[in-house]
Image 1 (cartoon, rainbow, N blue to C red):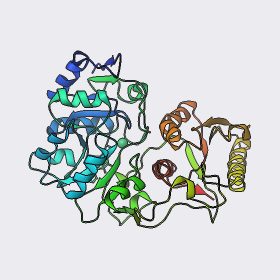
Image 2 (tube, rainbow, N blue to C red; image 1 turned 135 degrees about the horizontal axis):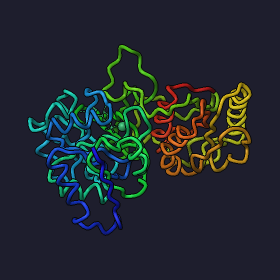
Image 3 (cartoon, rainbow, N blue to C red; image 1 turned 180 degrees about the vertical axis):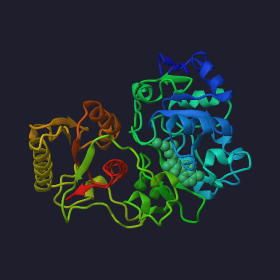
Image 4 (spheres, protein in one colour; image 1 turned 60 degrees about the vertical axis):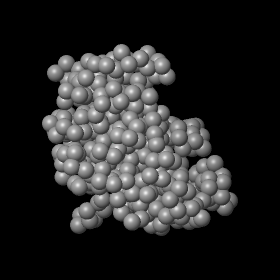
Length: 387
Ligand code: AMP
Ligand code: MG
């Protein structure tokens, strides 16, 4: 199949003419990759089981890993769900359009082919103007997982999509690099206490402020034992993996800001400023902890370089000057979690292209957007973490 690539001239003044063909491809059961504010999505008609099958085939994704249906306005939700629970209503009002997906009991209209056989459906209303206008013009809800080959880092530019999807789908819409860079937060609002199934840019702290009480699915905190069935089926698959063997280096005891607690309430939440006494309020670590972490990354990478391997190092703008050996790349500024999230997947892909054998990475505090950053990095590392 020949994949057509179109470029959006001005994201802030989209002409319907530019998206007409893409909308028509979606309506007639074809696949179109498009930018969203989180990562690039691989879109197909969410109400068409054949289109869902094509999505699974193009990604090489197991068909029990359900797809998120994307809508362009709140009115498009009602036909897809049995009910909208109170928590869902509150979150829609607070965070839609935006990087928040919610799980609802599904209506008859949504085929099991889209939901991986589940009686629930995941729905999101993206904020990106290209995504939003495309869905509106298509006139159907659009199932859109990340537009990467299953298991590879999610695409944050149209070039990443091209690398994985050229020849497999009808069209790629190039709307430039995405803003956020990690996938949407997923919250299950179909249970009594809403539960976070995947962390993202709508953080625990933001959710707790609106809902008061939120629980965290254990699948986002660490590896699952084989007998546990995660609520988000995707959590059981190896995700976001670079080709090289990635190890994360974390500061030792006494510095873990990961609450470990299953519950976060509005009253208990910590702000960036008060999260660790004695620590730099912007980075959450004191100088000794930072230096120890950097020394460990240097030591581990040197060992592998001396053994003849090609090694990548993930550092930050602040620590760039501390490293001399290996392919050293900054993931962003430690003081800006948004910059780290934004660059994360592109950097993992860059190391794939460089053909490194091992990657050693600094780690980050797990509050705010840091929870999503560390969730993605830990999964990419297969939970290989050195203190
Ligand atoms: P992706 O499309 O790659 O962003 O991944 C979508 C994620 O949403 C997967 O990890 C799924 O497990 C999760 N998901 C989609 N639909 C449901 C659902 N009905 N219930 C629970 N999780 C879901
Ligand atoms: Mg994905």
